[in-house]
Image 1 (cartoon, rainbow, N blue to C red):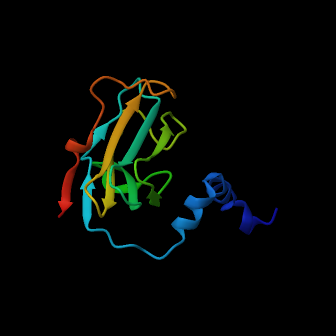
Image 2: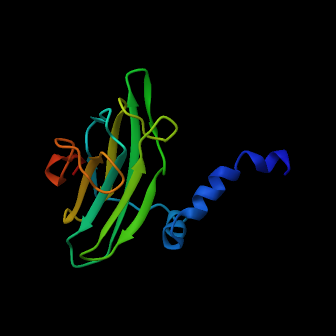
Image 3: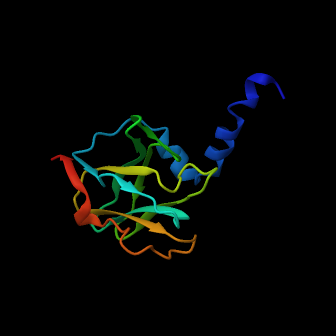
Length: 155
């Protein structure tokens, strides 16, 4: 394989694993969002195996949403982590989520601190973050950040 293709290949393969609709929406022109919410920082306990963020669309209309997850450290500026900035459409009454592995070689690591930022236009889109002890939605007690826990940064 040519050297110029070897480095971006893992990122191309990861992009191909995203649902086709999500890939198409990521490449669209930027959207303006009226509401900017943050989970604030949260840490991952030693028993964490998955971080799941979700948005539930309780509005009667389809809603465009953008979610960015950051790793936050006192050692430097916050940085975007996998899967990067996601812009997607959630149909009425539907949930969109992203479960992400926690581990030494994963983008998420126990003991590290993260922030989930959600941009939206309708406050009936409700964000939630949970930390699981497995990959099957076994929530670690005290780790759930529900819609009331998200703070509005831009009204």
